[in-house]
Image (cartoon, rainbow, N blue to C red; front, side, top):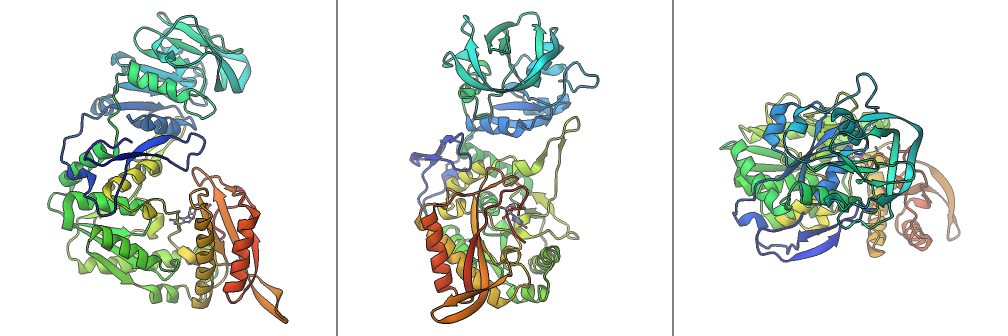
Length: 557
Ligand code: XMP
C-alpha cells in the first residue's frame, strides 16, 4: 500500500515473507512518537474494488494478494455469488480464478450470467479462461496431454492493452489439461506457447483469458499482466493504501461502536496490537485493553510489550500478572494437548474476571486477518465468519455476551503490518515473529516448572541475541529454542555432567502451513551452541532440528 495521507515521507522497503516476489511496497516512514498519519481527516477516494470469483484454485488467495500489491482492493467471493453482494461491492472488474474442474463436465461450476452483463472487464485465468470460452459461445475440449510447468509465451502480431510492456518470449507457468477448440465470437488469440496455440485471448470489451497463471512468481511478467488488466482495462488508479484504509476503517469502527465499550486482549503480537490501535484511533478511551502475563512468556516480554504500548500509545492497559495461576494449572501436566487446554481455560477465566470488573462491555476486538476468514473449497466456497479461538490469546470466553469487532478481517498480514507502521507501531513490534499462545509451555517436553522455564528463557535469549546480531531475524520466519526433555552425559572441566539437551528450531515459510528448516550458517550455529552450553546452567548439549513441515510441525509441543 502506498501512503498518501499526511505529510510523512515515504520510503521503499522490501517486504519479507514473500521472498520470491519481493514486492517493493511503499510505506510511510514512521518516527516513534510522530503524529499518527490518520490524524489527517481527508476523505479517502472511492474504493476501487476488483472481485475474484473463486472456482477452487489453490491460488485464489494469491491472486487477491497480487491485486492488492498493485494497490487495488480485491475480495474473493464464491463462484455462485449473489447479484446483491456484487452490487454492494460495485466492482471495476472481475477475475475468474483457476480451478480443478473441466468446464465440459456435468455440474462443473460456472460464473453467474450477470458477471458478463455488468459491462466491466473480466479476466479469466486457466479454468476461468475456459469458462469465458464455454459461457460466451466457444468450445473447450480435453487436451491430448496435460501442460504443467514452465512455457515460453509468444506475443501475437497484434498489440493489445493486456500485452503492454510484456516483452516477446517471456516465461509463464502453466497448469492445465484442457484446450480451446473454438474461440467465442468477438475474441481473438493474442499470444501462444508451444502447447497452447491460444495462451492469451481477448475481445474489444475488456474480456481477457490467460491460459497460464499470472499470480505465481514463475510467470515472470505476471504482475505486469495483472497491472495492465487493472489499470488499462478496468481503469483503476490505485487507491488501496494504508492511509486510505485507516481513514475508512476508523470511520467504520465509529459507526459500528457508537457509544459502546470495547475490550481487547493484547498478546504482544502484531495483529491484536494493530487492531487495538485502529480502534483506539477511532473511539479512544471507549477501548480497554487487557494484557495477561501467563508466566510462559520470553524473558522481559511482558515488560517490553507494556512499555511499548505505554511509551508510544499511552493507553490505559490493564496488566494482569496471572503467572502463579497458570503454573498451578500446569502442575504435573505433561501431555501437550492437556497443557494447551490448561493454558486456554485459565486464560478464559482470568479474562472473564477482568472483563467483569469493567462493567458493561459491548464489543470484543480481535485481530483476525483475511486468510483466517476465507475458506475456499471447490464447489462450496464458504466465507466463514469464524469466531475462532484466537491462537494468540488462547481462547475466547464462550458464555459472555459481546459483539465481535474485527477491523483487520479483510487485510493480509503484510497489509496489517503497514497499517501498524502508519499508525505509529514500532518496527520491533510490527516485525515480531509469531509466538504461540501457550508460550514456552509447548516448547518444553514434559513438565513445566519455574526452573525449566528459566532455563528455556536463557536459551531463547541467547538464540535471539545471536540471530539479531547476525541479521537473520527477518531472514527466517521463526527461530527458537526447545527443551526436548532429554538428559545426556557431558563433560565440563574435569567433571561429568548429566544435563538437559536444548534443540534449535529455525524455519523459512510463507504461510506456516508448510515450512523448511533454515540453512543457518555453521558459524552462527556454533556461536549459539557455544554460548548456550557456557551460559545456561543445566544445559550441556545443543542440537539443530533439520526437519521440514510436513512431516514435522514447527513447534515440538
Ligand atoms: P505448528 O507447530 O502447528 O505451528 O506447525 C505453525 C505456526 O503456528 C504457531 N503456533 C501457534 N501460534 N498460538 C499461536 O498464536 C498457538 O497456540 C500456536 N501453536 C502453534 C507456531 O509458532 C508456528 O508459527
